[in-house]
Image (tube, one colour):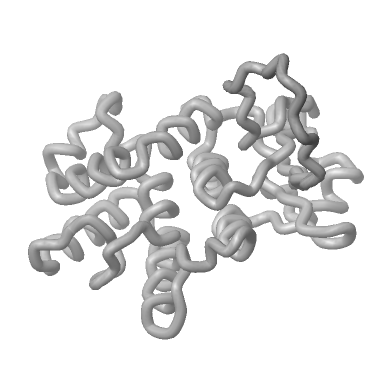
Length: 216
């Protein structure tokens, strides 16, 4: 396993020579273990971490070398699944959708999930994503968007803002709907492609950075 730089940290500002008051706030970086190979599951987590502002200290795990089968790693993820996040001193979470839900509970970003029916609809989309094949999910998204009115910007009907459902499904379909994709699925599913592109336009800073971090 190899360590990478901390994510979510802004290093763009130039240090000032003027004497400034030292900030005493400390931001905890959560330990995050990702496959050394690019995956859309890692992409989900990177998008969510950037939007929620939760910083990740990333360690890559080389599955091709069976680094996910070592006793130390299996203690974190008994099913040898990736990605994994250390939630506290005891608990590790090893399902990407579960990790994203957990990240949304941080920094007052639970709005990405919602509550009551809104939250249940988010959960339902996450269940669709985890159950359906990519082709089936594309068909589901296209059919759903065609049933909506003028507002086709978000998957959860009636929402005016981004939800975790958008993040999860967008990430899962990245290899199929990206403008750099070699598939013809953008033309097959035009409404899904339009929704996909609009999310990038509305959240370009987070989505494009997450793609770079995931190396997809």
